[in-house]
Amino acid sequence: MSNQELKHKSLNLKLYVLVFGLQFLIIFGLCGCDVVEFFALEQPPYDYQILASYDMTKLKESSSADVLAIIYMPEFELLSQSKSVIASQGQNKKGYKSWFTMVAFDENDLRARRKYLLVADEKPKVLFTEPWQNLSFDCQMVLDREILDEPYANENARRIAILRRVLANSRDDIKELGSDNKMIDVCGMLINQALEAALVKLDNWPASATRLSEPAGLGFSHMSLDRGKIGMVVKDDVVAVRIRSGSLTGDFKNIILDSLPEQSAAQ
Image (cartoon, rainbow, N blue to C red; front, side, top):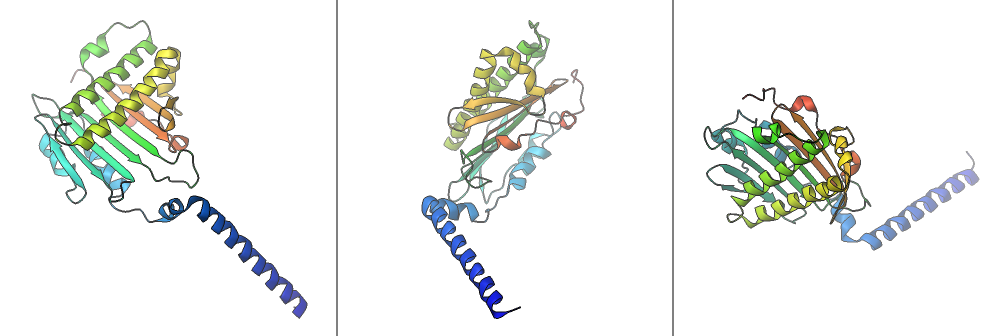
């Protein structure tokens, strides 16, 4: 290779480095600390650790003692409990992520009857997504026979009534613990806001309730996170609800029916 060719390649490399450096400075100047925070390593507890107790809790099987042994990470969380509800709530040091796991029990046999998981994260998974913030909510609960046996006008009316019961149950469970931990109240407000936004869409367009069980879920407008998606499936007497809002809506995956408990409605 001639000296002239080497000089040409060297010049091209310098120009490439200069252009890349200018682009980085422009991005850094526009976004500042946000870019630094985006590239910062995730701090514990990690998502799989937060998810673990929710996944390990089995409706109609797990006792309050079982849940108490797995739900609480003392180095990261605060534990709250009443006679029939246990919850753990945490927030990372910089306040970007807050999470909340709660389990409600049957008052007679103290077996898990409802479980909830909420994660709210102000740090995006993908740079420059709009909005940056995201919210993830999952819950499963055993439904009372009265809500299942009610005569409804059609299947869409039944779906909407079940989702409304999910909202009512979550409010009641959180109310038991709100005075013990104010952050649980905040988490409850986030859950209410998301479920109510979905119900506004369903009340205005009841026929859209058919999308709740579809793989892509049902889209709705979220007051603070711009957009959201919700999915809901019912198996025997158990309902599962999933909500993803903000930057998580693009990766929404509806609940897998087979993941629900293999138990009959008679139990």
